[in-house]
Length: 374
Ligand code: AOF
Ligand code: ZN
Image (cartoon, rainbow, N blue to C red; front, side):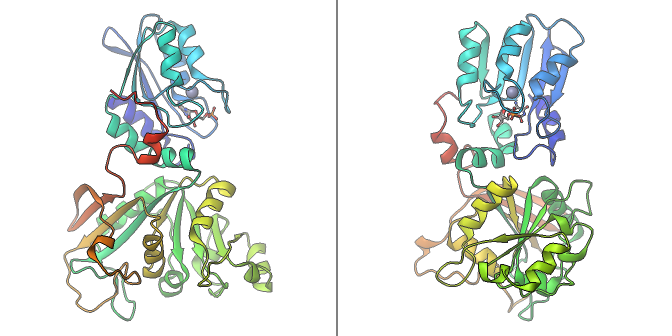
């Protein structure tokens, strides 16, 4: 299963909104076939592994990170092909949360007399496909917040200066996150103050969508996200009124995607609707919210963050900007209490990963699945 997980990772940045899946075929303890899902719409990992086998697979064991499918999608169902191959045993990392599959793959394999085991390295397999799982069950993207801060919790000086608080290794990790996520999202103020590229530079990887919230289209036309080589990967979100302006027309002509989002009672873009639109129109299954404070606060306020990555530099600033400063609560009970998932060293910085849901299977996914996990 560890090998299958390694193979699955090769689909990073290429298969979303589908899952990353890896598969290994074993005979007498030797690997005789390997496969992974290499691209969206391409053959599934199981089929690639079967066709790569260097020996007859009859009687062999298939190890796969995700339950084999039973539905006709962009490719034919895997289970019938596994049965036809004569595989005797299937070891599965996690059940497929896709309602079209969810337990039926295991059921059909067992009915045909194949020996099945579910839940091997379940946490690892689930971690790899947490974005896919939320998106396929809820139709909403999985949302990750990213904060780069000082030891005393500041993301910038009071005047907005923030370059650079964290070190090179942390910035590399952020680029790696961008390369595996479908979209990075920032508010108007961040583009205005930092004029960021929001590209993947420090690691190899593909460029995600860049989502910019600018309700009234006030940002300068010369901002990098509107003019650089990836401008066609920028989705500019604004109100219906702003969309009717000449500026909107000019921006669209230069290749940007403009997305109309309804506003809420405070006049700001309605974020839950925005997230749903990103999923529906652009097949975005995961979003990395990179700030600033206003956007992070509003995501927190609306309970829209599934995961938080804190990069904490050994630096004390004193008076400064705080990542969630626009949220105010009256009792500690209203604080967002997360589950600690990992505390890592990132060069001279700390890298803390915390989750909304207990680090196993999120509730929405769990409720949609049979109580099969062993
Ligand atoms: C994948 N790759 O290796 C496996 C998947 O439209 P399709 O035919 O590509 O089917 C996508 C669904 O198939 C996906 O939502 C998941 O439920 C199941 N398994 N998908 O993209 C794979 N094994
Ligand atoms: Zn399949």
